[in-house]
Image 1: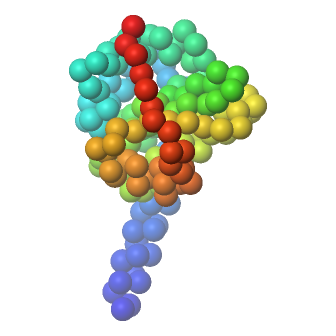
Image 2 (image 1 turned 180 degrees about the vertical axis):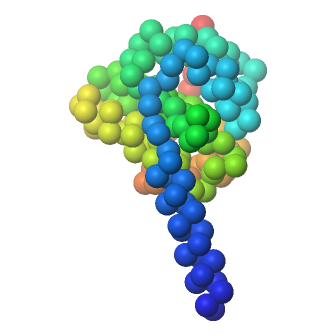
Image 3 (image 1 turned 135 degrees about the vertical axis):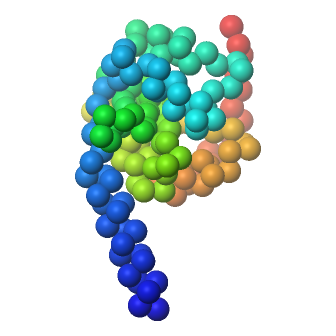
Length: 156
């Protein structure tokens, strides 16, 4: 039992150390290759999405809501959010697999949420592919509920 407690304490201390190192800042154009690489690593890029185009579009509308998380000059996380005056949205929340399960995703989300609250946002929506069970579990863990709605889309 003592070994289990010591292991838990060691893992908790490692998590705290990582979060202390995390710098969350606005996306910079020079970040693009690393961000796109991270999105590929996290399986966020699908054939119907062009990450370069998504970045270009975000930089035209509320670029201050596009954040990267950096540890030791390495981009290890991202979150893109938006607010339309009615609802906030979260996109491209990604954490490098080497850093997952250390609270970094939660930190990134909380920073995005804080920025959305400052804009007057009272509800955040997001979409997750049904097949992405671990991500659905993450969002449920940080307080999201199934709104029991069907997400529809139309490509233009």
